[in-house]
Image (cartoon, rainbow, N blue to C red; front, side, top):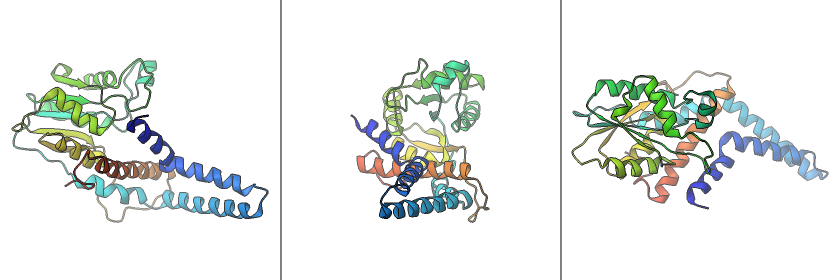
Length: 265
């Protein structure tokens, strides 16, 4: 089993929502155990998990975790733009194939930013980079096909585009795209991805030899130091999940040598 598969399995288990569910299940089993010591442990664990869930639901923990990521690389436009790269995200080939139309979720904001940039810089080379982000893709459609349909539907001239569809993660996005495009040192590129993902993406692309500038999309946090409280487990858990995934990704990529520093500059 390769590192990609191991990383995916580890994250599946340790993703905040899945980990909370597994710990609650463990606590529930312990609470109904015939042994009194295990019952006490199970009740305590369930109560602690309930407190954690309540804290995530009511406190802006997700915003606090996301803000350093989303503020790290604000939009930057160089004096010349030779190309624009958009990284694939959560395109869904299976549902796209079944429904007959392109389906994407959070990453849809990337397409809007990319489409505007494509109009603003009509001579820039356009690149989409994104392949199967699962261990064993079984879809008849590919992520690149979904992206092509989505971009075409919002007016992006796909005839100007290069589609890199082998990459499975951000490191491969940077390396495989460089192998196709061969960016020179005097070329300046814009990179479009979600704001919380930008630090890891910028670090990977620069390590792969791109002179690249950030154009973040789809912010999930605001600019207030003290975001308002709200009781919304679904929204806050999603933010916590995105943030923890990125911090984990930065650490993993640094340890593997994919990026130069655990906190890109």
